[in-house]
Image 1 (tube, rainbow, N blue to C red):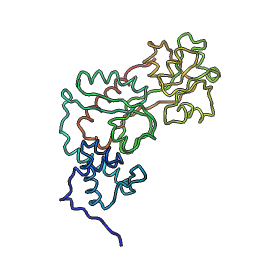
Image 2 (cartoon, rainbow, N blue to C red):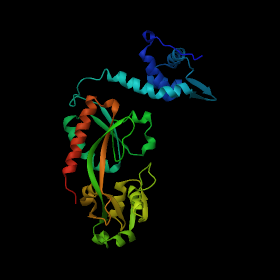
Image 3 (cartoon, rainbow, N blue to C red):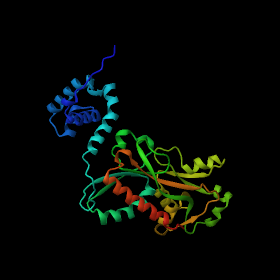
Image 4 (cartoon, helix red, strand yellow):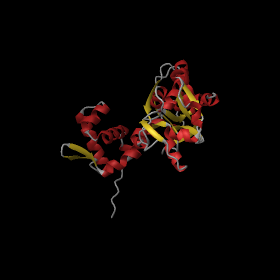
Length: 311
């Protein structure tokens, strides 16, 4: 016989759901109390009420630590969604950019920061001077847990959509070779044998196993000569600007930094095709006025970049 624990919604205090969220996140009564700005006895009382309502201990002691029960683990995802939906009921119908003090959190690789954030922030400063933006570096899909995704307003990245996020094309790019001005090979790098003999800087972003260029080259049965591996495109270009190493990176980035770093763009002997950079936004924020405002600005910035000619 299966026992089903029935809950009377008329007796449910929604503040208990907020307490449950804190307890499941922290797996600690004292830390949950700090998050909730409540006393520890009040939080312990909330935990006991939740245990009675749900029919499960939720948190159990294991030595010096508290651990979530399987039932508590299973509640985490649905609870986050339920709270987001409840909060959405009270979101204002409009977004007053001029008065807003909202804080947005974006995740993107360094090349997107270089290309998109200066023009975007120019718009934000003019339209919404009290809005702040926190940019988190792209660190691969492994970091994209449900809890982490809940803190993100926008992601800029190539590739497929993330669970719970919608995708929109932001701008396109292509890959080229970056070399310093005065490089002894220069335009000769257009020739395949000279390209393969040259020493390269590879960009392996956290969460990836290798440079995406090398993944593509392998499909052609080609392996280039890698002398240095770095974790970001900006690092690669700084090294390229001061050595005879070359970097196979997005063309728009070379163009943006060519004057500052004294770089030349050389068309490679092999063409990987068009890169598509996308903007991803959470399904939960699809109709949120603040998210709509930021997405509109970001799409405008992407279109402006798309219209700009590269070297």
